Length: 443
Image (cartoon, rainbow, N blue to C red; front, side):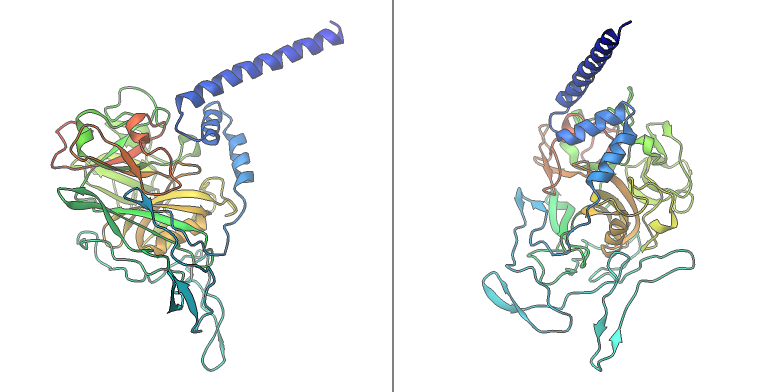
C-alpha cells in the first residue's frame, strides 16, 4: 500500500470519527436545551468515558482564586427580583477606626467589620490600645487543623427543639448590603412559610464570594429522593427524573443531589434498591419512611436500623460538631481539589445547630472555603453536594395546590427553574406538604 493511500485511509478514519462524535454530541445537547453548552459537553464526555479529560480541563479553567475586594451585590432572588446593591463604596474601614461611608445617599458611621478566624481567613494582626501587637489564630486539634467559630446571632438549640425561624446572621463584611444575612420567608403553605432564604458574603477576606442559603424545618415537610436519567439512571423508578402527577400540587421546593458515581461519592439507597453500598464515616442525607429527614455521619449519627426510606451519601463530612473537618480526609477528591487550588461554584447541605436543614450555594470557592462557609453559617454536620456550572440548584414553586407549577430559583447563578419538572439527568431532593400529598404519590 502506497503512502498516499495510507494517508487517505487515516484521513477518512478521522473524518468518520469526527462525524460520529459530532452527531452524538449534537444529539445530547439538543436533548438538554436548557443546560449550558459547556455543562452539556462535560456531561456527554463523562458518559463516554472521558472523565479524566474533563477533570483536567476543569482544573485548568477553575484555578483562579476569588477576588479579595468585596462585591456590592448579592445573588439572592426573592419574588422574581434580585437584592440590589446598596452601598456606593467597597472599601473596608480599618479595624478600630471611626470613618464614614455613603449609604443610600446618607452619611452613616462605618461599622467595624466582624473578624472571625477560619482556615480561609485567619484573623489579621491588630494593634491594641497599649500599642502591643496581637494575633488570633484558628483552633487546632491533635490530628489536623479544624475551624470552630462563634456564630453571630445564632441561636443554639438541640435538633429536637427548633426555633420558630432561623436567626439573622450579622454580616461578616461592613458596611453590609441591604438585607444581607436576613432570612426572608418564602414558599408559603396555608399562609405559613415553609422555606427561609438569605444571602451573605461569608468570608471577610474574600469579599467577592457570595453564599445563598435556603433553610427549612425537616419535620414539617415530606422529603423524597428522585432519580435522574443518568445518575443513577435505569428504569422502574417510582420517583423518576421529574416531579409529576398527583405529587405536583403538594410540591414546595427541590434541590440538587451529589456527585456522579465514578467520583465514588458513597452509598445510594432508595425504593428498596441499593445502587451504591453505604460507606461508614461518610456524610449522609437520610429520609425516613414518614418523609422526615436529617443529615449525619453513617455509623455515628445514623445506622441501618430499618427506618430509612432513602439514603444519599456524598463523600466524608465537611463539618462535624460545628467544626471544619475536611482536612481529616487528605486523600478525598472533593472535585479535583486535592490541593485546595480549584475554585468553583459549589453546593452543600447541612443540619444546623438550630435543627433546620440548610442548602448552601457559594462561589467561587475551594473546599476549605466551602467548609468554612458552613461553619460560620451555623452548621452542625455538613456535606458537599454537586458542583460546577448550574448543577447547584434550589427552586421553590408557584401556585401551590394547582396541577400546573412553575419553578423559581433562589440564586442568579442557577439554571433552568423548571429543571425538576421536565427531565433531570441527575438525582435530586424534593420537598412536599405532607398534609396534602396523596398516599403513594411519591416513594
